[in-house]
Image (cartoon, rainbow, N blue to C red; front, side, top):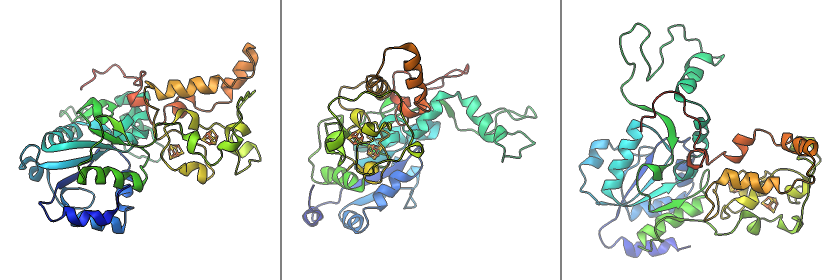
Length: 338
Ligand code: SF4
Ligand code: SF4
């Protein structure tokens, strides 16, 4: 990774313009930028940050007033769920030489993409009507019909499904992770500042499965056969041994490495936020396939017991990638509006 002291030489010329945008996400990716701490100050000293709603007061019109391609690079975090997010992504794409998908939601749809298991009407009904802590006798739902027949409530579109950023605009490269490690965010920014852009479509991180860089890999056996999986609260676990070897589900074998095995370091099994390896089309199917290959029996009853020991399979296998998967999710009977 580059030394930030080299940035001083870059500041002698015209400062490159940088933008950061937040679509449908939790804000963790913004934290991954703030976690650069003093290094962020160094980066800000040699760049001109023209748009960053999480930290600066800049408006849509400020971006629209720039010439096309005037922004050197934009980091977009979050998936696309709303019409105004699509509008912003398209505007920033036009104004930027490089557009970078920042974090798992922009990369694969992320946790917010799990909403694709439900139709938009069900989601809004759940959020604004059904939740026990919601007291809402008027029954007004944003983006829906007003109860008195006065027309539509709210003007901006709520799309039927969540989409990863590259389904809406061309993405030059990806910084994976939920959230991405700050070191990887720094690496992405340095690539831009030093003009050493990776080939189009590159996903920063390793090209090997996480297991290859996991501190527990020494205890991952060559062959493993299991009758069922256990959850962490059901067993006395060894904090240094491979989770799979202990019968606890870990998605490391089907996940791109490069996160510094941070969940494993914190005694948590991997859930796949760095996404699939190159050439894997569907992360959830790959995870399902490798877990199924561990079954110790071909007997239907044994297999049923094995399958039943996998909690919430849809949520587990597609925790970060449903919106980018072959399944894509479930649409209700409303017309898909994008
Ligand atoms: S399965 Fe999980 S715990 Fe085991 S080596 Fe791979 S990443 Fe590490
Ligand atoms: S261990 Fe897995 S879930 Fe945790 S940060 Fe790394 S890739 Fe993401």
